[in-house]
Image 1 (cartoon, rainbow, N blue to C red):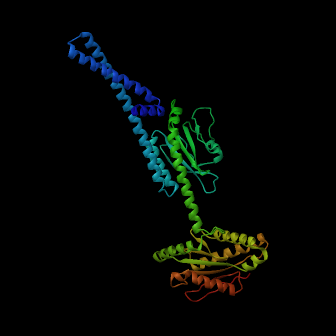
Image 2 (image 1 turned 180 degrees about the horizontal axis):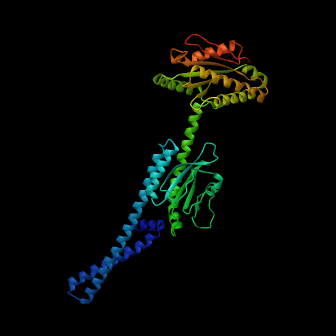
Image 3 (image 1 turned 180 degrees about the vertical axis):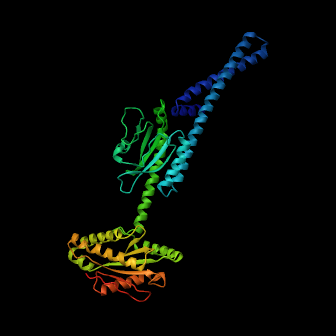
Length: 417
């Protein structure tokens, strides 16, 4: 009875098990009949008719055994293939947990895709920070005649518009994405996690009579890979957001003081090893407290954001600008001499002063400049010396640049308001 219950449950899960049960029963009774005939021959003596019937039934039993064995082997091979696919997807999910960048995720995706869907090419597109385009993060097995764009516009992709997978047929007149200009067929799947689209997964197949059928078979595995990639991209975006929050000032977008201290330590070590100069600019907005009191903190915040933008705009890509505290900002200028740093500081001072017209209030900044090894015997004195020069500029009338002299001698660069 227990065996019958198990077989009934298996039949419900897979109707083909009913056929297997019938075949097994027929095989059992066939072999049983053959065994009975042979026993009868042994007991009652030879009988040609009985011998013929026994032989036929034995043959049927052997044939049925061959059939059931073949079907069982086929089902077993399918189970092995399915298990291998599950193992590959589990391995992919585990590897993606260690991915730190979009390039890492593309590498993991490529390895899994080549195992599960070796006959297809593929490409991974990820949204940029402004989310106005998707950038190509990786590709593999792309046919030589297929044109793969470096960027995609979301408005040109039906998979992204519909939020579900879309098939672009190579030679068919069916609906195709605007970015699809090749004869190959593609299966495109948007990668969505927590309601946000993070990218697009594209599988590419050479156009052939059975292409549509092959894409339909591959859809399930492709969706499984897209789901794993969606979570991985979501985790990377979350980590990047948390990292940015830990090193960025939320108001100005500049690096915070913690990052400045780490960056200064790295640049100091580099300057000591390479023998190149390292300069620091210290900024302080003049009369900022009065601006807040008279015009409100919203105006003060807007001014501080614009001042930060002017400082970043007046410096190079290798320079680091940070919010030191309150209305004080600091910039680290690697491989920059004292005179060059003072010249940049003066140009930035003028840019800041021109903000007065935009905001309708008087805006200016005092700036202190120091440089290693010209004005400091030790790199640790860079910030302290720049701060002293800042207060010297304040004492001299504000809205000016003061640079430190050779070591402890102060040379003043005075600029009239």
